[in-house]
Image (cartoon, rainbow, N blue to C red; front, side, top):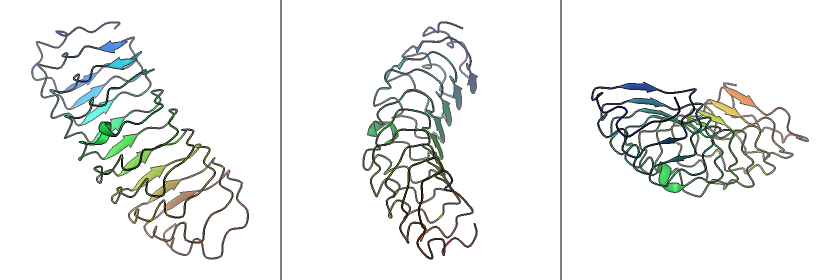
Amino acid sequence: INTLTEDTFTGCPNLRFLNLWYNFIPSIPENIFANNPRLIYVDFDMNRLTTIGENTFTSLVDLEILVLRNNPFQDIPAGTFSTLRNLTNLYLDNCRITELKPAWFENLVTLNYLELFYNQITEIPQGIFRNNINVRTLDIAMNPFEYLSFDTFNSFINLRSLYMDNCFLTDFHPEWFDALTNLEILILYNNLFSNLSENAFANLGSLRYLRLDNNPLGDMPAGIFRALENV
């Protein structure tokens, strides 16, 4: 499939699942889903999308899963996901994203699973995830972060899995994980951490799996893993 038009799905008012992966679609018409309000799953994986209209998904108030991974986006407008209040899973990995826009996530209060790995993101704006307290899996691996604020993950009080490997991070902030008391999986391998503080994992009593391999770590502080009774 090379092209979609605004009336492509007009005769499908009861459409629930739409899978269009592995095609050659370069763009999604602004009103293409105007007559498909019952959609709960939309997948555009492995296409050639470069842009999306800001109102493309406006009518999809029941949408739960949106897959946009593996597309060469040049821009995703700020309000693209603003009406998706029932969205649970959002896949934006390998989309050539360089900047996260706060408005993307502002209304996604039911979001459970967020993939942002393998992009070109260098920073996460402070407070961008403040309304996403229900996220359980966050994957930000394979991004060239220059800096992550100490409170980057503070809103993720229900987070179970955090992937931040291959990010070229050098500074390990001792307060990154203070709020993640429910975290069970933490993946930090292939970074450039050389020092860890004694309290780096102090609040991670629920942790079951930790990867720190391939970091240039020196001597570990005594008792650094004392809280990790389940690992």
